[in-house]
Image (tube, rainbow, N blue to C red; front, side, top):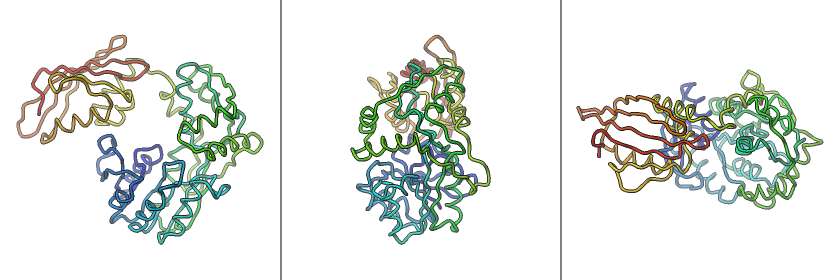
Length: 390
């Protein structure tokens, strides 16, 4: 059994998929099990990575763990690492390339905690994540102007799937214990060139404006970084103008690293506003195949659901909606769902859902009318043909 923390994140989800493909038993620690959307066969454990007791419970009886620490600061990490290493003999830690240069960084601090533990460890030190450029997506969708610090900073951005493939190799083969692996993409691109790549894939003109160092520091602070990390990040980006990140060949997976253009092509829809028809098709197809996490990606975080036959008022947010569905369906086993639609208009679409249940329970049919704004579902109004289950 292998424990994966951060299992719903950019890297962790690929780690889960890679382990399952290799026939491994997987346990995932997630904060919101109802929103996890992980594949069948994964043992999902609810809990917070910052809670040592939750980590201890999740790690009980596992052989190895993929560990990441999502905070910009190391405070609170020591009891969590201790809880993990009390239970697990091998830990693969997602660190960062900068750990080698800055011994005071959060990544270096956690490496030190693991090195001092009784567990075997493997450190993965990736450079910049290609996925971090999704931070530009709102600017790209709304104005086509991307404001960034140090536009000529050269980075060897890495695809999260390449990081995950190395993690899977290390988790399944104890021969990688005690090793540190620096990981990068296959090419150096300046931030200007990254924006140009996105523009080329989207077929949309984009323009770069330089953000001042003070603005960049403020943005980092707004993301939760402390003053020291914000200052170090800005200084690092400035240093990359004359001293770009290296390109380190990937020899562990036996295949070349994915390019940044490949990554952009896979994520192109996240840089543009989807049409109502595209949202409707994606949502209904995801629901049809049971990929509820995929369906959630085209819903706004504060989506509103109204269903007078089920409750008074409205529900706000994906979690509230999913928790209501779990309560409603408790004690009922859905065996099949028939979906008719979507029927699309300018900024709305409709779909009819018929739920079939086990034990000769009568079927339930409803029609949902969805409102779409800025490429996301913002509202669902539910009308039942038959009385909903309760």
